[in-house]
Length: 208
Image 1 (cartoon, rainbow, N blue to C red):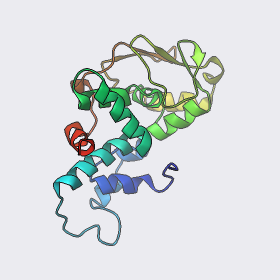
Image 2: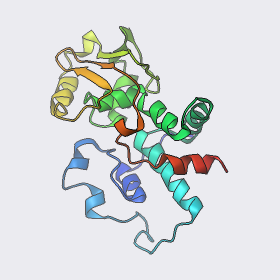
Image 3: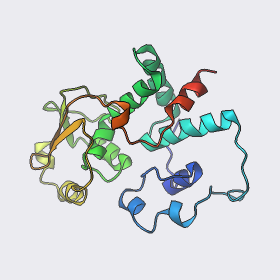
């Protein structure tokens, strides 16, 4: 399935909440969710009555769009989470949070996950001293993510890092902004993940 290339603000409006897909615009008065707080399309303002399946589907779509993951890959992550020990929903979110593009976004080296995905794909980041250009690369506790030496002089990267320097960093990541690096202290628990996701509904969706 091809990656979605349309207006991402429509996705936030469809899910009825901010998914922070547009970088700084999401924090401004120009955010589409605040201006038009209803679903896009001709019948977006109509009254909706959601079934149990509909609620489960929306929960799955919200998580998928929040992390910028395609359907097949998301299902694959769920299957991995299901095989792991522990709570399946928590395992799923932990996997999604450990993606390289998500960590790059979380520490403020990118304004959105889409931008983080692009920067990773262009080879601007290293993991434990080795360049990694796969956005879906799954990090482990102890891994160190850093901007490549050649990329640290990039005005684009320096400007983005400076603009996002005040963004709160999750407790499970230790960031060194002067060194343009971040270390994964541990993979997050559910209470350390501030994602607008109802993971139990996702588990129910795939358990049918």
